[in-house]
Length: 155
Image (cartoon, rainbow, N blue to C red):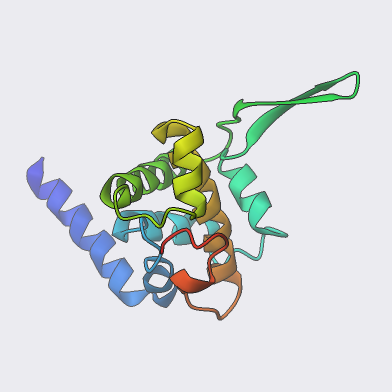
């Protein structure tokens, strides 16, 4: 059993080393070898999605909307789409929050969110934001730059 796992890990690491897209998206904090290879194998170059929100919705990282009588109520995440990739992104976001919780800039998007919501809600919100950034990196020739993220998430 452990030999089989070792063989699979070697194959995944080899795919990561050979794929430029995997290396490019792994620059985002919280996206590692497993997440990058899973996203590239499932999404490819991202051209199948019109924008980053569509990718996030496809992964089930957007809230359900219940509208009636002019009232819009946002609920829990939809959990539609690929549960494996969604889980990888949420766990990656959770690790970023735990690693940087005391190092965040006071006015940053993530620190403000953590002041209002619990860490699991913040992890899903960060995973959603990461999915949108992944789409940009997959569909353009841009490289990840922490300084250019909206709200300076990773500063």
